[in-house]
Length: 244
Image: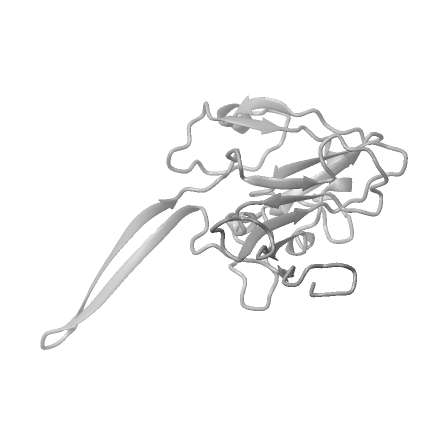
């Protein structure tokens, strides 16, 4: 967006970026180092490896992580032509994890799948009711399926987590495909030079996660920001075919 005749103030620019990868993704990281030494013959090679853990949000977001949501909570209006979305204070958060453990790092110019998704449910679905549980109980949920996620350093079975339970058929109908996730998040760079923000930088960056369904006319819609880490193999196909 640039200067127009509609009253937009000079410098009020918004730039959309397809994705912004963190320097390191959250989870386990192996750092290796090797050195070849030549003293006479043969060459001797020395190598070592160090296991590191990159801490990042996984089961719960800290206060302040969500900068804003649209539509606002509890709002009433005609939103059937607007995809609900969540604006995150961290521009790299949608790509700090992946929906599949084997998802390769994207190359320049390619798309990158987000591990966060906005799932909208209309009153006819009906929308699930959030409930509180723990990471340990989630892993032993019995008849409720959840992907097997290896524990990371610092995680405990008693760590709290908020979940929604969705029937398999409804999940297949409303969840995005793995290919969809390439296009359901982006970075928004906002020029704030015209705003009284003190010593803040001239440009602020935000991660934006967008829902994949429009609301139903005449029906209330509830949207949930959910984690799809590990869900890649269990998402519906691009044509809507449920995962086997």
